[in-house]
Image 1 (cartoon, each protein chain N blue to C red):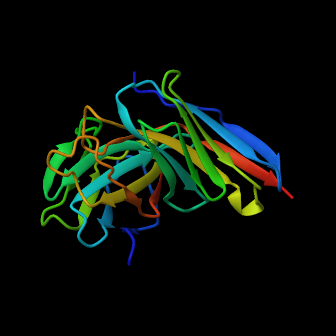
Image 2: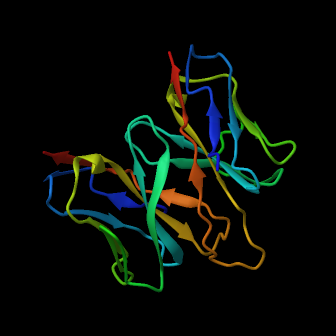
Image 3: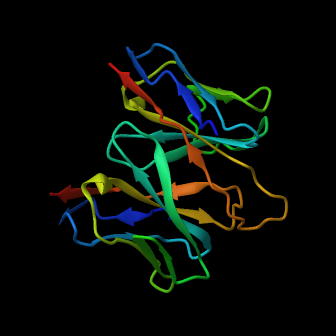
Length: 113
Length: 120
């Protein structure tokens, strides 16, 4: 199937770490992405990981990929109120090679001061 | 660098009416995507163009939706007639393009702000 699954809601306190999880179904996925969407705005690419990697770190963001379990996570260190948004996991599949993205339903991150 | 532009930002119509959305991609981007994002869901690809040709329109409801990119730059997406379930945000995205032989090549998509459509 085409499903990319995410938990719907996460609430953390400012300064804590946030971990957003995602599972995908297609083992041929080449790239996996994390996008951020703020109210009334389009999608902003946060980071991506190639399928032959198991970890990628970019400042406060850490992406972990478990290809065996088809599990992707995004960790945000020192979460700030400005991180409040909806986070989408997306996969790009090698078989299509068209750049088509399959998105999860999004995780709403609420950061409390 | 200017981003992906979309207009209008908001549109309210009654069911059975027609509506059109416009997208201007980033200059030089060969690939253009239209996504539909229903409230509470992730974006779903409707149609993808490479220059002025259609690459994938398998999820486009062709009985009522149409899209064109005549000169390989701007694109319009039309709904005629609209149904209540078409209420959504319509996102346009662009990327440099599919590289020949670039199986699994990284191909970042840049998204516009979207058009929020409400069908009453």
